[in-house]
Structure formats: structure tokens, C-alpha cells
Image (cartoon, rainbow, N blue to C red; front, side):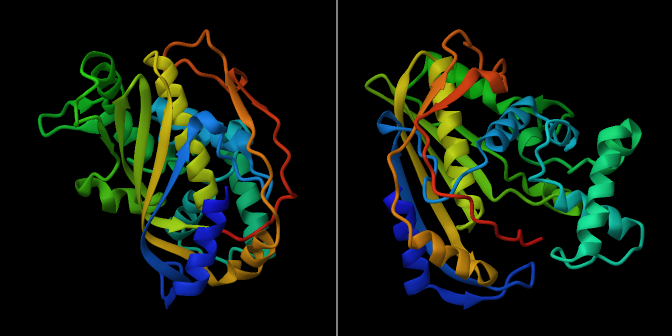
Length: 305
């Protein structure tokens, strides 16, 4: 993962200070790209321990077409909690505390406990709007129908692998404001598959990239998606190509970035996937086994909400 560390150095060296939606402030560059050969190992960061179970559960959740956090909460994955909690407070006319305060931590804990225990509450306040999974599986059409983009792409990979239209988009312009109410408009907004010499590759475009917290998560998620799609279409693993727009480090992550850059990367692990699963929609958490992962300790950093 040296290329990822080089990207952090690039931002520190060449980035400019910019304001942002959260008010935190960033150092930012524009237009970068990383490439990972998936046959060489699974690109999971080794310079800090990654939350792989959360990555897998989120991907399964996307592929379900879900847009409610209850599945994640029920599986003890809390990477989406902050946005619906903030929306809930705003709708109740309550002050939104600083995300690092004890008031926030106590409040969000109670909110998530209620999401887990109260189905009606979860249905209303756990809903993020038409975010990733909804757009992947249920893109709305003008006549009131829906398009399952994932199923269509799989059919195209199998039947017309030279197609240049194997694209999945989450950037539905008509739904952006609705997504913004309780969730977040898609950061990783479009991905395209490519078949060559019996291998499946994927390129993803990310408009906004939180390089310390989010990008390692995104790399692993799309690498795994590519591997799952390859297995579901009887192809070998090709490359995952990660293309960035606004590529930034939050100002309150600089100490953590420096700590990470002081560490030496270790050998990449291998991802073993249950070979019996042949449908992209049938994967469960127990179908994945990471072998040989020896990371440095985790590095905590706050999420900018």
C-alpha cells in the first residue's frame, strides 16, 4: 500500500487549504489515481488496523438495496450513525452538539439503542433516503419503474463482456437534495467494469475523498466488490482503479496522518471467498476469510459530520 502513503505525502506537500461543508477545513488536491492488481493480494491497509467486518457488512447492505441503517446497527456496524442522528436532532428542533463532546456521545448512543429496539422508530429515523444501495438496485425511472443496475451489469458481463456500458451510477441528480436530508450525497458516485483476457477489472470515481479515514475503507470495499463480481461471472481478478476528484486530509487528522506515515507497510493479506456462492446477492459475512493480515495498531480520528 505504498501508493496510498505516497498519496498522503502528495496532499501534505502539494495541497491547498480549503473550507468545507463540515467547517473543519482541509488540505486538498484535485485529480489523483491509484491502481491495485487484485491477484497480488487484498488491498487492505496494513499501516493501521482496518475494520474489515464493517466494510463487508456495508457492502452487503449496499447490494441489498437498503437505505436504512437498522441492518448495520443490528450487526454492530456504526459507520453511518452520525448523519441520521444529526437529522433527527434537527427535526426535533434540538441543538446539534459538537461530535467530540460527551453530550453527542451520550445522545447518539441512546439514539442507536432505540434504532435497534424500536422497529417503527428505526423505520422513520434510521432512513437515509435514496443513497447508494437504493440507486444501485432501484434507480427510479420517469414512468414509476425501477432499474436494478447491479443485475444489468452482471448480465452484460456474462453476455457482452466487451461492452463499454458496464457502468453503475449512484449520482442521481434528482435525488441529491433528498439524500442530503438524513444521509450524504454519494462520494463514490460511479464505477465501471472492464473484461480482458478472462479478468474482471473495476474503476471507481470518487468526487470527494476523506483520504485518512474514508479512502482505505473505499479501496477495500470496491476491491472486494470486484472480486465478488468476478466470482459471480466466472472471471479471474483484474485491477481495481481508484480515481479521485477533491482528494483531501481534514485539518484535525494531520497528527494521525503523520503517525501513519511513520510506519512501514507490511505484506498484503489474501482474501478467501466461499467458492460455493455464485450469486452476488447471496454473500454473507461468513463467506469471507482474510488470511495473513498483520497490521499496525488502529489510529483513531473523528469523523467530520
